[in-house]
Length: 327
Image 1 (tube, rainbow, N blue to C red):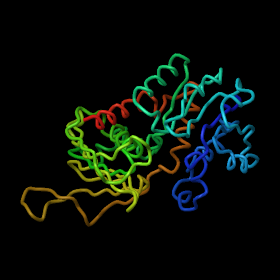
Image 2: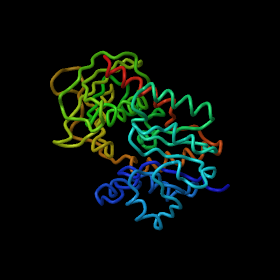
Image 3: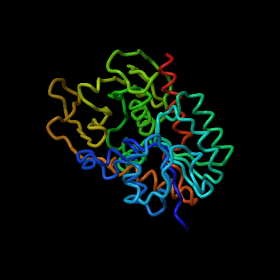
Image 4: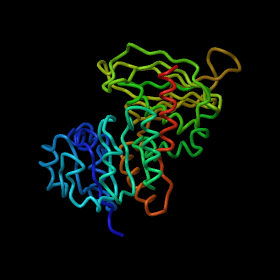
């Protein structure tokens, strides 16, 4: 079967720019959408739509891009575009763009999906009515190590989960959304919001976004606390999981993990404690996850796999976020 032809909307950091960073690329084999698309035989990066085309035009021949356009209306051969990747700000009217392409089969969406939950629901309805599949770029859902934990490995490793701490920065809708989605991926669904308070810690880069301290109660009984940090001091999006048989912590944007088992407590007969002396340190596979999401989308379009990060699931995460912001 011929590769799916892709139009990408936006050509900033996540679309292309991160690949230029030697440090970022060392940690992530696939740091950008263009890297994943260029490496996957099931897709051809046909078109770039962006407000500034200077960078796209400079790498057009290198990446095999056929068209670079300022607007969707200018794109030639619109009927040949199969997939639209939205690597653009949430303010962009995605439905208006999609109306230009009569044969769209799928979209891949960066988060935040839109400017509001209600607009995200409108987009979901449009996609359903036009039978367009939708994958959301919650990249941890493409991390094969995390997927192994989500399929029973976490309970086997740490036992029954009692509490979890999330650290994030630069906005709840922005980076915080990744950590809430990861919580759902590993722990299941949330039961209630126990606490929520707007924080003065840091200024989010997206208008109307907030840094919020919050606490969730999950359906499995675990309590999840989320705390923002100021990215002006340092950048981190991490998760620390405490269970009956050990502790598992993800740090450095989820690139690394540490696991500690348990042994008898030194301070109380009959109690257990974390065995601090023997941590297991490892690297996750988040650096390959954008490619995995594209590979999964390709397989889904061919009728072979379910989506790993569907829009339907992402809207559950968004609902939690907006409930926290409103609480």
